[in-house]
Length: 476
Image (cartoon, rainbow, N blue to C red; front, side):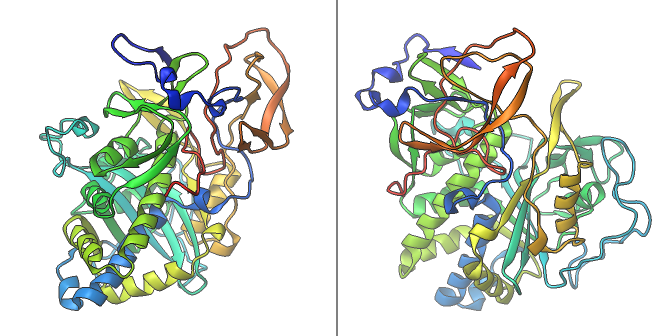
């Protein structure tokens, strides 16, 4: 999707900072995930890992600076299936149900082969309470009056503190599933209630066969407070970017420092656009919600790294982070300070390069006027992924994710037919950026062509898709 520079807007192409060959001559990429690929530290870090790291570090900081009496002020909830909490009845026959067919997907209750591994349900929610209504970024939340909170992020982290192995499964919030307690299907985030996670816990079990051991909810207000407490988060951009829906506007390429509310506008962006200097048009990220998830993952990695750098040996910043956690983070009652410290130790010993990250695969469709994602759970790869989180397969044997979608790369001065056969090309360097090996269309079966477009440099891999920041180690 593209649009021209609108009346009254300055064309970013006129900015002297943009007269740079890094913005021209780039290949056109269909931004879809590729198959197996080795990933670097920045690419492997994910929102869930960072969220748990926040909680673990804050648990450590609480103990160091305040003692257990301060830790007792944290917000807690009871969850089904947790030790000492209400019981989640384990069915013995045909559950869970595939929401797309109504048919059972497994025939026995999950039996874990990793006895020390635990599943953490991580949710990121918002209610707009911490955003100044006069802020230019207030629209990032929309009008929440009477609507309550919603889950903007739903993920499962499976962590084995004994082996320091970990894997993460993300649930797009528009997944169309059976909702616990309701007779009809709905978007998975409609099951969310930050103070009662049990409907979401049961919904995840009913649809995906995954049991939850611990629960962590991080309000986006905590996100805002953390970003402000550490003096902002720096993100590198290869082009100007914007989202009119959240009032996000970065007018020049380079290293940009986000304060809390502007950072929220960035990570909440669902209509993220970059400026194409060649066509002088704004182009929307074709990866849509999956691109937003990838940008959230990248930003949270940067935010937490900044928090760790700034709070080490600095009681003032540590106190600000602790206060944010006590106000905006909710844990399950069994995630005690002692267990947080155990988690912190596991996180310190975890090698991110070995951590697998996944998304529930699905196909977009319309249900009435709702745009939703129908889960695709029957592929061999998706079954193997779910088996890890169900405890049916070991973490150390977790597979790479393979999305069953085509991936194409087209040179900027050529056209490609709408139906193609594919072949793999090696990695190349374009405008100083390394573009991973991709799939191209060597021949066509129709004469229908498309208009070429220049895309910004992206890092495309099995778990990060969309238009992402450049990999600039100096920008942190």
